[in-house]
Length: 563
Ligand code: C2E
Ligand code: CA
Ligand code: CA
Image (tube, rainbow, N blue to C red; front, side, top):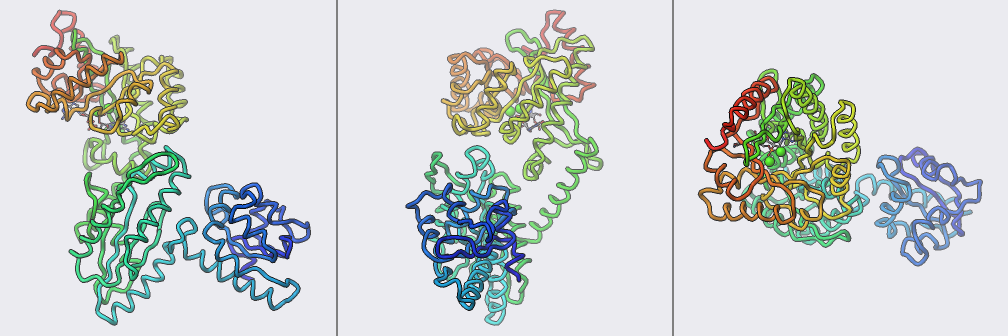
């Protein structure tokens, strides 16, 4: 029987909640405990997760049997969490399925049939939000498109992706993620018209189908209106969160009847919006399709590039503004692309992030940077430190701290030889954020931690004082505007003053001319980095730079300090 082999767990209970029959998935879910011949009660299994008095418990404790449905090992979570998640929205559906007289064969068969209906429902719905899932949407879309063809109508699809959802999940935990998804689905229900079809077709990916779309302009206007309504702040148990949605739009002309192609077009449009820094709503076009194909190729090449060791580090010196001495180098990743030459991170880092490869690149860079530091010192140069950039993802991975500590120790280096640069936009949420505890661990192990791109808006100043940070790195956009733009000048001097007050140092990046050096020194900035001193250099040129820098320091003319 199909139920026996179904991937979902199904059981029939007698009047006291004892298990009369259960399918294979159910046995597995209960670790083999729950068998018809062992006098086992389903409530025994559920009591630990549902206290008496709660709606779930009450539904199950009713006399009679019930069939229920749990997606088993497809999700990577515990059985009890799965039960909690899945049973919530299903409690209503369960009630009609319980049996009055289990000895009656016919009733038993009917109950099984109803249970199969339930399974059918969950096969096309998302248990968390109750919305149709991808399969359900494709099915409905197919019907709509066939009807639209007869009636010469267009159909519009709007895909909605929640920006930074992974970050929320990783920093505040899956409960917060689930809470946001449920709130999002409720907002969508309120914001949509009755004839529109809603679905959740992926982790943080929702779809709104408009069966009567007159033209692209209308779809776009509606999407933007929905987008701003979705952006309202959400009060989660773990604190507030302002969701930002990105959207991809596609339209099927009458006669286009393949739902999968329509969804794919909307996905391409969404990827196109995400591929531009401020892209919020993307529209499918042939050009967007081409860009998508380019990006897919890039993804393949990135994976190959990592396997084949095409990544290298370049090194940019950091200079003490007080006396022009070298404070260290920042290691910056470069991709030696077999056809396109040496690529800077702006050409691949975002794609790497979307593929989850950025922490692999960070790990590569740890080895490259530490090896280079050894090589510079072996050549007789005094290089106090090397700085390494950590992505938001690396910063939340506790193993990354161990990996760094191991890499340092293995080479006979000291933690104080290494600076970890953390982006201000890593957005430390609160003390429970794993990024905060990792910063703390790094600092306690003796590493220096610097807050990169500081002043671009994210970090609350209270974070700076509370976290174990050794320096602020003023973002280059501020440094470059500082001399001609009153507001930037005020911000830069305020950052320096703040750092002095809490006793940490400041480094200015993106210094391109000597007037900036003078002004920053006057304000009390400790270190400087930028093209004025040197561009990032491959290791051999960094060694040449070191030799020259050392000679000019010895001759009492600090390299490029005062022009
Ligand atoms: P960042 O950490 O702020 O690095 C400084 C960037 O500013 C570098 O760009 C550098 O080449 C550039 N720069 C330095 N001096 C000047 C100047 O005087 N004028 C101007 N206009 N630019 C200057 P790059 O190497 O392209 O790196 C861009 C960003 O990519 C970095 O910004 C960093 O956020 C990220 N990145 C680089 N390497 C890594 C890495 O190994 N891991 C991670 N996670 N991110 C990296
Ligand atoms: Ca940096
Ligand atoms: Ca920076």
